[in-house]
Image 1 (cartoon, one colour):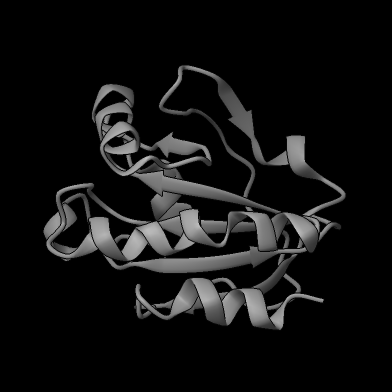
Image 2 (cartoon, one colour; image 1 turned 30 degrees about the vertical axis):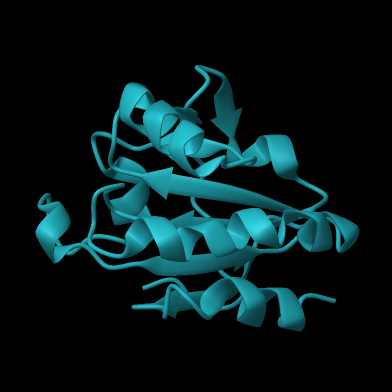
Length: 146
């Protein structure tokens, strides 16, 4: 598993709008990766909205939020519309990003773990959290950012 000081694995994936994002695009900022394995994971939708509600506070701390799911761009687009999400929802349909970050035990979303990762401006892992409490993590991560 990733630990503090590790170089964060690079990725290039599309978001729910079709825009391509690479981790290196955000070098110089803090980045929070929020893995929610599937949009239809029980309870996930309401919990994930907490990141939406804290977006402005994250931005004040120079931090970008990137949500990553195993869904398609179309599924993420419907999810974003339904819950008025206002940050990129990245589509990791082949689970390569999730596996690189420890967000999945195998290829089945039923066995996937919610993971939260904070990456520093230098591209290194500041924090890596497994099996995060989806309701509490957005505020907890925010409170620890410098």
